[in-house]
Image (tube, rainbow, N blue to C red; front, side):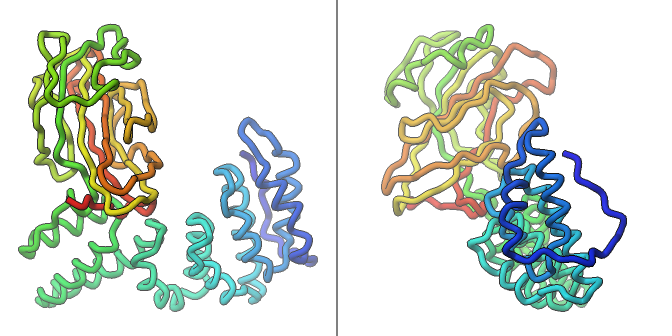
Amino acid sequence: MKIPALTGLLFTSSLPAASLTQPLADIRAVAKEGGGNEKATAAWQQLTQADPGTLPEVLAGMNGANPLAENWLRAAIGVIADQAMEAKKLPIEAVQTFLMDTKNSAAPRVVAFDIIQRAQPELAEKITPKLLEDPSSELRRHPVSKLTNAGNEALEQGKKDAALTAFQQAMKGARDEDQIKDLAKKLKDLGQPVDLPKHFGFLMDWKLIAPFTNVERKGFDTVFPPEEKIDLAAVYPGKNGDAKWTDFTSKDDYGQIDFNKPFTMLKEVTGYAYTEFESTEEREAQIRLGCKNGWKVWLNGELLFARDEYHRGAKLDQYKLPAKLKKGKNQILVKCCQDAQTESWTVEWQFQLRVCDDTGTAILAAK
């Protein structure tokens, strides 16, 4: 993507809101491999001449836009905001209204907050505490950071109770791994350890069965018995003898389900993990997975997603799978394949899985 560069000119003419419809549509139509770039370039030039009062409309143009279009619009908004601040015509109240309306997408709301921070830092400070339970994890970072700093200052003054309160409040709002790790350590040091699996919503208790074959990586597409029917009392022919279900409870703070522990470090094998999640209601959710092996995930018999890749690294929330929980028992089945590589960095045969909403807030099972 190539966005035209400006030379700091303050445009003398301005486009009214009514003239924004087509430029916004042209930018939102931009696609990969340069599709729509010519129109987007012209539209971008038009948008950067928009009246400052139209800034909320341009921000709204980011709602639901694809990542490329988001980048074009973010750059245009930056120019409009800079010009508005220079001319002292920034519609700060309208930008704040846009920010606080959670019906807007997270990306333009983050941009709106950044504009307020640059234009009126004192107003941003007043808004920050209101973002602690915001749907956007990026916006939550600000109040979490503010509370963490307050806790640090209280500790320096010897006020442990005040520090503890600040850290606990911060932890309630924290959704990003780095902030959670930092706060968990601070709370542990103050004698208040955090139940990290519960905070994240990791599923810790599973039934595991292995090993089935994955020679020549053919196990990924092979339908082994657990994919056809869950029978926890069954015994099946496996790669090295009988395969049967075994109980496994993770002791890892980040919910790692490690097949190597019950089955040893095997290669060219396939394993399955099964658990049940009791939901208090029917609701939309996300199943978030971290895994460096080949994997598939089913919810109530429906395949949600699959990746036939190995050892490219794993991280928290590596994959976010939209899911719909039904009220009552929900069956979750994970297939995890290990390949033939023997390097030390290929021995992991594991995954971590959590259930949460789209903000990363844990959804806890009824039991």
